[in-house]
Image (tube, rainbow, N blue to C red):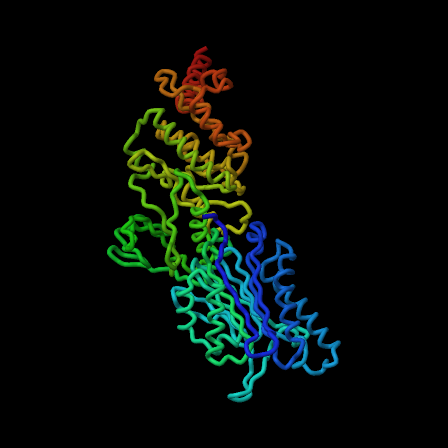
Length: 574
């Protein structure tokens, strides 16, 4: 199934016992491009019986909304686009009433109710004025999403307090709500909802499941049988497929979901059984859990309780799951797709039977070059999946690399990932990144610059160096060098050993290039680095063996000191 918004819908309208149908309705499902940027628009209007031009008002209100909304700028929000269109339509209706012979009688003007929905991505935007209604059925439970704008002067008499064309200034209700697969939205005029109970509506939808034009017609007939004395219109919209959530929709979940308390083994939580604690830190807590429905093992991650009031941190936390869903690569941990409502703030990913690269390094202190190449190449393939989507991982380190029992390598933890176009990453999150991964962070971070793909290449180069040598090319000095002058003093320590020759000089040179302090001197593409790890680069072969100061600075300075001492002694004796 395509990763786009899809619906199944039906609608029906009848004049009922009246001579004229003053209701009007419509729906627009645009092409895929407009669907992505504008969404699906649905509208229903109901005229007032006291006006003989109210049917015109209904038709104009619906048609203008469905047509003009799609003519607004793609850079505008749904709310701004719809409000501009509705305000313009209201002004036109009001002016037409003022020009008519009944200009001082609002009950005879171009007046109607209007209830409309724009479904874009995973959000329903609701615009409402008057006393038509919008309902949502979710998990067989109905919910009224609108408020009737009607004032009752007695138990039998009422009038509209707000409507399209009633006043020069439009006051319309706006709400937005998250959409879930299989949600059903119902738009209905009062000729329907005043004469049908919801059990009848739901039973009819179940009988004619998927055939909603028929269901709509049957419901109109049932309302007439129950004595409806007004025009009758109903629209039924079922969500059958949803695209990935947009970033803004992810962060809006904070308004609807709670941060959970710490979990314990054998505790049931939101459809999962907690098996054991996996890791705990100042940022988050992870657990091995079992999906109660399928018995599948998974990893569940909850935010730190200490930071549960930090909105920026929680937005970053939710963004991790969005990133995981965007990437489909065997070398990147997969997000668990929820099939039920999620009531709390947490992320769920696949469970990997294996060990972290940190533990693997401890268990394998002297790995063969071939094995190191294999591990680094797999990490690189995972990183490439980030880079092609204009994402920078920014936290590549052994703790965030898993190796399963078959040798498959996967990148985990996207807490520091930078997404192109998102500039609102919190300072707090960036501080966590620098402090937690100083040994693997690229030098430019310590100068206050943003990361690039070359920053990830630097981190990968450091890991390669560590796997082959057990140490770091600049020791612990990168994190201490927060100025250009200090960074210029950093010297790469070669791992080429002329005696052992277990690591070719061209491999050492490839690692050196990946770990260059100056980003412009590093590889441009991660694939170039991997190629040079396997294939001798002629430029590297032409180089002589590294100077002693690079290979072993300690011996260099000890030797230099000894030579100077001998020279001084000779001069003194002479």
